[in-house]
Image (cartoon, rainbow, N blue to C red; front, side):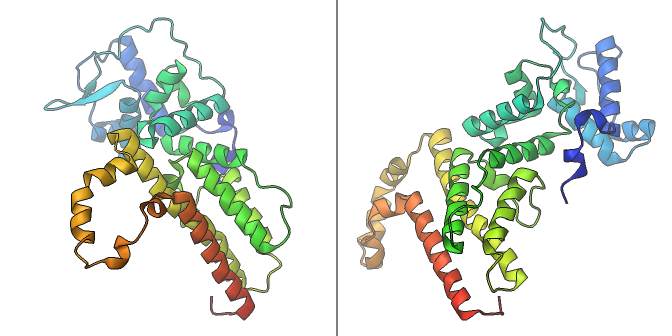
Length: 314
């Protein structure tokens, strides 16, 4: 089922207890009751005073930290940030429309990686107060779910698509390969045991199941195929993401990586211990598109053999 929370308009959602705690502590900071450098009440005290679970109090403190109102100092614990009580200089407090928030978050993750995305970083990019973002999303996980929904919705498969199960599966796999090439953070947030319950991603799975619907196979086999195919895409994308990250973060391109290991490579491959590896062209290893297409073709060959055998053991 689609998460009721994600499908409920923000204005109609009940306010979670942690938000009330955040609002109250923020008000105390703004009013000067808690000054810069003063310790924040402990998580246990917050839980006791507000009659909430420790996990709820911990989440409230995490939000306060993420929005820059408090910070952790060695030897002092969690204290009010030095800049928390500084007056803003004309910065707007109202959050922009939800779609603009999500699109900006996607742009940050695409350019800088998912680790660079935080509510505070996003607020700075949008030129709004961090707390205003919580009017639209509950937390970063909620934000990422909406990002996943948006990028899959942007690449909706054609209806009905090409004829034949193989052409359809090739189309959806290549479409998803294009999506992850544009959004290399996706493999980190896509789980196949705890899938993102968002309409955009679910529509891709539904389309794949329709492509398999008329085949003479057990229902379990069709479901496994609908899971295995995007898993193949995401596995290939994980390698691509790691390669791009190495180039961005360390300035180490594929060619530079091999160049730095030229002597060790020659030592191993010239030893006659690995004659077949020594004959492998470097460009084959570097061709991730080619590796993806090979994996896709061999996978579908295997699925075709399964269909011909009509095996019920899968």
